[in-house]
Length: 158
Image 1: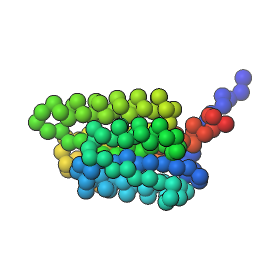
Image 2 (image 1 turned 30 degrees about the vertical axis):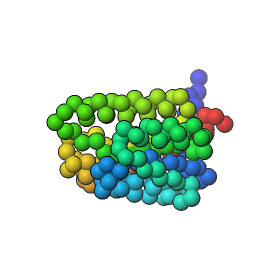
Image 3 (image 1 turned 180 degrees about the vertical axis):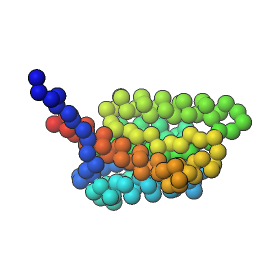
Image 4 (image 1 turned 90 degrees about the vertical axis):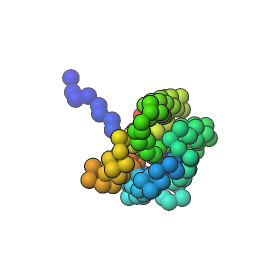
């Protein structure tokens, strides 16, 4: 028996279209996540005209806008970015859980790559460090994941 076939997605954005759904809440941090995501897509060959940025009020509305985009079927992948910072009430826990649940449900229902670049942090400092700071660039990482999965889906469907 020979080696098993291995299929992986690549980071090839040629001819692919993406939407970045981003919250306006904590705008300065989210803007840096968008920059990381768009920069990554362009670096890997996605044309500027093939990237749509959709702004929503907050993290709660991200999955709602993502569903409208998914329904249209005009993108190869969705990148979601936002920031949820823990407060003094359980609101944080509920919002994080529903955000994840909503996007996960969309990904399976529409068979569309949807990456999760929504920061769920205890403090604004932690969020800043993950938006291009010392801990990384979660916007870039979310774009890489969406691009790789879009390429993988193309390979699997070929």
